[in-house]
Image (cartoon, rainbow, N blue to C red; front, side, top):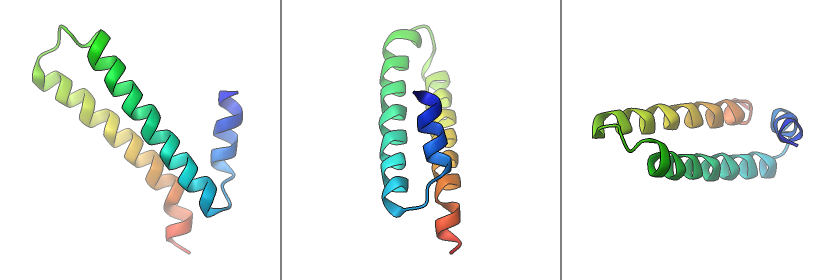
Length: 74
């Protein structure tokens, strides 16, 4: 199922599919941050938590920008 989602994301030809993929990416990122900080990051200090937050945000933003790049350059 995950492979199907990824293959559909790479074959985005419409604006709606890009918007949907952006919303899905944001929802998964938010869920990751909440679950990670709640259950796995209890032994980290504030700076380490901030680094994880920033790195994961950069990955999601990079992925979303890559999805939108073709449409932006039209």
